Length: 102
Image 1 (cartoon, helix red, strand yellow):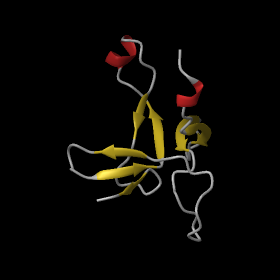
Image 2 (cartoon, helix red, strand yellow):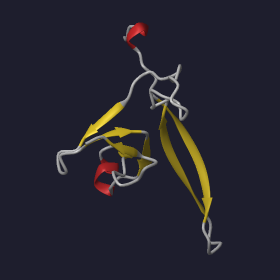
Image 3 (tube, one colour):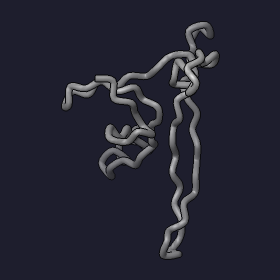
Image 4 (spheres, helix red, strand yellow):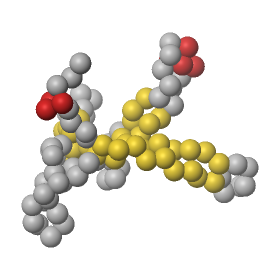
């Protein structure tokens, strides 16, 4: 059981429905948006709601990224057979997902 003072709520899940351009149906997209990831507002004033940042240190590129958004993506049939229903995906060249720090 967790001690409430150590709990951190770092983001919220958004569900959006997208309709295919060819009219053949629609699909759902789920995204996790980090809560107040920036320590400053756009005007430079301190963000009173900022609680911290989530960092991704990428082993392949050697770069560190501040995570702003994570997608809930699918899994392989093999993983589904093991009980997994989603994976978490960060797109490193997407400014909506991350800020490159170094």
